[in-house]
Length: 98
Image 1: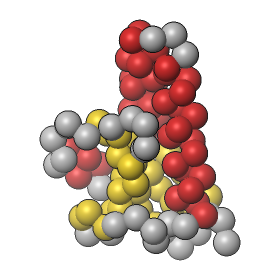
Image 2 (image 1 turned 180 degrees about the vertical axis):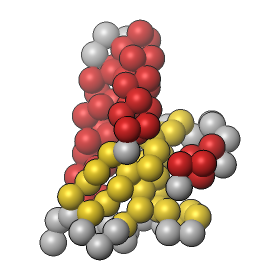
Image 3 (image 1 turned 45 degrees about the vertical axis):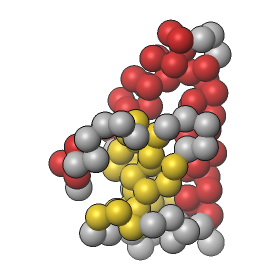
Image 4 (image 1 turned 90 degrees about the vertical axis):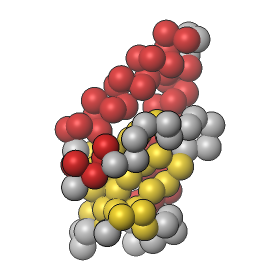
């Protein structure tokens, strides 16, 4: 069963900021980042328990090409994405959003 993926408003900002930065590095790279993030969201919707729990009930899936993690929580009827963060950021930063 595929669950609905819901993004918190902060996640939309995470994605926009990262895509803007990558687009500034190379034309089209921002779109590639967003495409990969969407692919991870789809994979999480299909197999939400696949990725490890990193804190309490929050799991993390990694993007393949970009050094970002998708932090999410599995709820009864949906998956809530809490953060999309660069791997070099303080790992406790996303916990403020729990």
